[in-house]
Picture 1 (cartoon, rainbow, N blue to C red):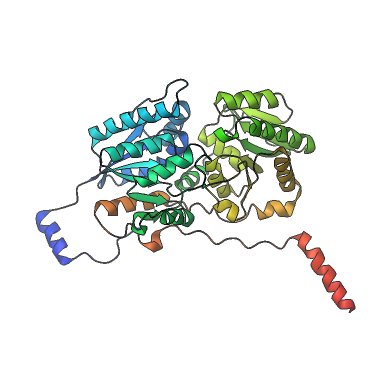
Picture 2 (picture 1 turned 90 degrees about the vertical axis):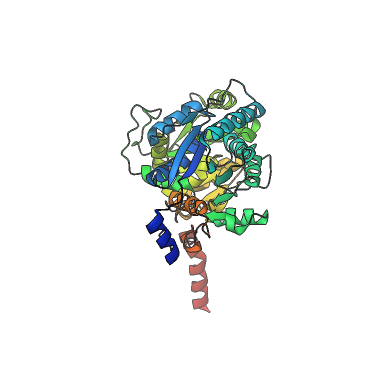
Length: 436
């Protein structure tokens, strides 16, 4: 897919033939600390290791989310080379940032990489980029350029990703919109590669695996009783308190109004989330509160559900792969492509809005169909290949980092369907015209 265009100069061939010269291996560190980072870096790491004649790759596990991350690493058979174990009970963001900064810097001194790859907008990503910068090591930022425009929403992710960009040498933007955000901030175009989002690579690799809910937190939830499944997740710091209470009350309204649905809500480990959700929803008929799901369990639920309500950025990227409409429980999103394509709708956290928007999709077939058509606007399954090829070319000092025709392009936006409800006025006008 990424064969080199053009021909090498004869003198280069002569040097290689007579001197057996070749570019030294590129030493790469990939840093992860949370489950989303592992999910989105898994196939990138696999591609680097597949091309082992070009790369020597080390994985740093900061342990920011220990239990959920370890399960994801097991799925993808990733064995960290450095396990930093930075988490402490009741830690602050400042103390976490300091420990990640210190321990990742030490790992960089030991491995001496050419480039450090960070993913997304976690504290692990920001502090690791800063550690690499202090060591004067180049940074590659995967999922670069996402912007909400409000440094406190989401908090601290919006600031994390902006600050990481300042220290980044190669910006792997998932979409053209992300690229445009970076260009508007003054990032040189030659340092940006539009790759698509790596989560789509992972979903495609996992989606065809056979899966049973037995032995998982989903065990015992009926799947074949004719009821539609509504998947709910909510855990963001800015949603805690009144907003989360409003969401819980809206879910109770929905199951009361629609006896043909079941709500499945994997509850985040954050004790502030659990106390609110369990206090309001526990023992509510047809609302199933579960422990956090393993990623394969989650993918199975996402494929099986009818509708998604979430404040998660990652799920906004994942759901379109399975053509599941998403109601985004936030005031603003840094991933607007799905809403621009009509596959998601940003509705906030008011009780009335949640009930109204969910009710519309549960009762209006046309509205539902409009939000469940089209290809995923976030990726095409080849993002990992693009990232690794760009790093290879960077290491060899080739330009451009990736030719424009090999970068990710958004699929065509689906045309709005002619709704049956739209046809009645047309028919009435035709009848009236015939009488004139």
